[in-house]
Length: 399
Figure 1: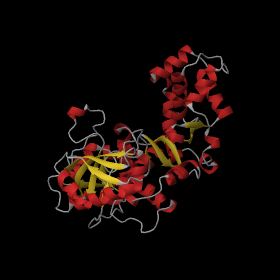
Figure 2: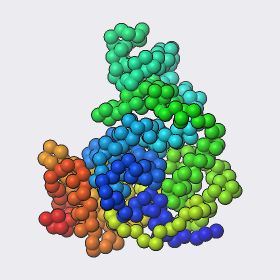
Figure 3: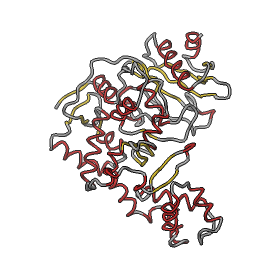
Figure 4: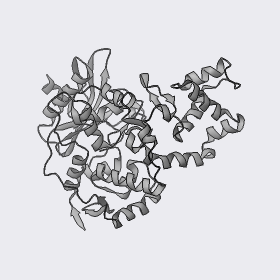
């Protein structure tokens, strides 16, 4: 069995995620964004917009300043991406849609496990199908528009926005409707036949085990190296489901067991994985970046304890509200609490913290990356608040 040091595992993971520090020298276009997706496999969606929408930031980390509209066009004009529950809610390459059909079927079998949906079905028989028919007749349509149809009396139901949203979310989970567009982040629903490419819809549906094998193998390529739990988490497959599938991949020679010295659990990689010799460059990472979204793995790889503190009361926060780790070379060397203050036209560094082993050039490298962020967001300046043990030096470097 091959043995890796933690440093080798770390470089393997960073390289697999396309964070080697090599950014385009020309204006990024769809080809560059496709390469990002080859490394991340998806773009996780989150409603928090303190800095920028979460699904725009991983591409910035890998490309530098680019036009976020590229993501929207790829998803909702060119239909190269579709929205579904990948890791969490995410934009995924449409080629992965057949591999998600087992999950759609799983949720269809578990209708009664949704308490709110079960209540709607019990109290309003036929309502879910009525909502589906509304999407067929009127899509693309929002949950609010479906509820307004009820209010205007176009249906026999009493008006209830929550019930409309519940029915639509169920239909979305089971794949009967999908996202046609997201104006102002609001999901507009339509049926897959009018949204997804016909070549994708025509593809055969793999059985559940084959789909899980392919997703776990893809997770190994995207992660570079990971434990069974790491690989399972990438596409939210439960460990008991993943364990026999990983064993089958090992038996078939498609996954290679490896030892990462210092880890207590076996790890896996793909047989052709090559450990990069060194890393360069610096990148800020959104909390939902695949390199760091599994917090235990982040700690194992980087000796970096990271928690998102958005829902922690302000007086109990350790590092800040919306904190982005800073990757420099092959180490997480700092973290900054950032806010795009669009009213004032500035990027606010509400706190800046140095990691214990951060090199002397950390402040300079971080300042350069923050300047790119401000440029990307169309902000005129950077304001560093005096909080954190890196704040004073960072403010001095930024002038």
